[in-house]
Length: 242
Length: 242
DNA sequence: ATCCAGATGTAACAACGTGTAACAGACCGG
DNA sequence: CCGGTCTGTTACACGTTGTTACATCTGGAT
Image (cartoon, rainbow over all chains, first blue to last red; front, side):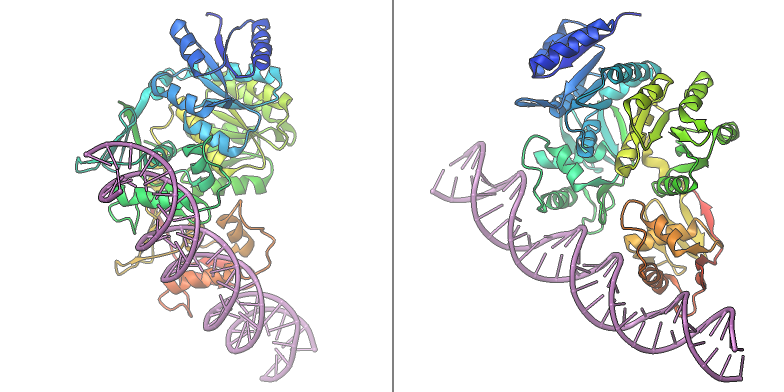
């Protein structure tokens, strides 16, 4: 079995250096990266077994990068953050992160986590297939994650706005799991608008998506309201390769 | 396409009860166990898809149990602890735990964690099928747990509120068993309101549900009052897949 | 049998949660 | 410039929920 090649992604050079040295001292190959371009370069240049991906990468969002990586790669990803709030974890899981660890971390725990994730990866032989899955079928509808196209049960293509698609993605990634408005907001845009907004934007957005995909928006069957909690995608979701 | 069977292992019966009810309300089959012997019994008796294993089990150590389980089974294990020290996490990962979660839980995160672990192990096609077990027939009424729809003996759909449905679920899950107000409150809402409320909310809620499903709410036949105890669902309940 | 303290039923009310129409501002293309 | 789309904010309507106050019932004590 070959030595694990870990990609360490952090915009802070000191953290990068410390982590790579630590991993190397523990028998792993550690490659530093500061941003998405670095990640792409390393992954093109050679095999990467696992990515330690910081959530805050200066101008870039680790969550966004994770989501993009997931579109075309199944490499295990451990998200790293100084703030491991539940919302962030949900967002990370929503975009396909394998695990989450908070800074400052116990380095021994980090090693244990890395081993656990790699162990799981090996144990799940078909994990690669799951990570490439990006076509979602639900209640006769079809959402293709690559093309961002949505087709109705009758075969019509339905035009959704950027926000509506993001909301649909968040819901499809968590079928039958109630999502709070904060969680939805976090999944929609972690680094963008101020998350402190106490407005009704999510409700309106949900209403707009309902108007487009529900047979009867006044009696929704797909996106149900869970009073006092938020919204839950109530349809079965089948995920297949696109 | 089977429903997830979760084994809840905790020596504290209150925690066990709370967790199993929460999981059941979310469409999972939850089986309680207090110690290793219980675990072995359940795993011998039938399929277990995932184990929520508390670290501290009275005289027994969850870590030790996890290690032993790993010797001959690859069932996914989420370790649970009130103290999520790094040492404990490391020990858990070292003996093969799949994930770790600290009490008290964010229940949405717990569900997300369960889903993530199950997705990784490819043990489930989708969480979408979890409600197939939950159609309840009683006295001509029909409650479909999948759609949360309630039909009267005359075939009319009756609209129940979220709380009314939760109450009905709790009653249907325990036919002919008197439930105290505290038990009903616990079944209704684990993470919400303070359970110490000495108000009359449960009584009012029961009254509201009676108004909707009793032929004569002043002379209830379905939800009977047991004075000094609480309420008992007096009708026979037949549970079938929906 | 009567009495009564405690238990329970319930109407009324206030606060809260959610749906949604209307509007304004930003943005883009013709 | 104008028109169309997207998006969040605002205001209002309506359903839900718990609290409060009072009426009624009940079971045990006398």
